[in-house]
Length: 185
Image 1 (cartoon, rainbow, N blue to C red):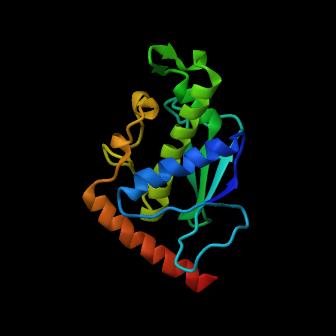
Image 2 (cartoon, rainbow, N blue to C red):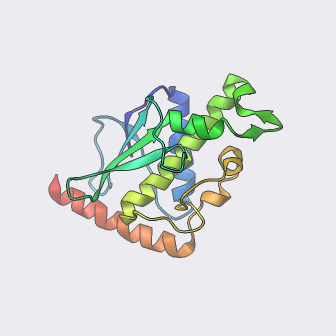
């Protein structure tokens, strides 16, 4: 994972984003490393660009804020560029209570931690879209359409972990992607 654009996130928040992705994908047997734009990658790495945006949120036709997406090429195929919307995340979190306190009323240090945790979970989800070339969503787990707000603020990553069958498939896809990227370098 290459953090090519950190948006308004501070360095410790970026580290938290990466740690969330590592936690979720590590449970599936997939190692995640991270670097900033221009940093070298190892020959067996599958490289994916992550860009955190500090621009106004995008909304779906049902009014739901978009927290992240994967770029597409001219043919509609998903590309190795993931976008995370801080405005979309903040919009979703604005309706959440944490320890009985509305998100917007939390101390900055707590709300910043929750934003970073959520951004990491969104990044892990979008990474799944790219690796699986998955445009749809199953009913539950990491790849479901919408996250429950309470799951975003909960410290447990349980609802975001991959199933055993998803883990096997994704490990295979990561190896295929790494080989393909090596042959095009």
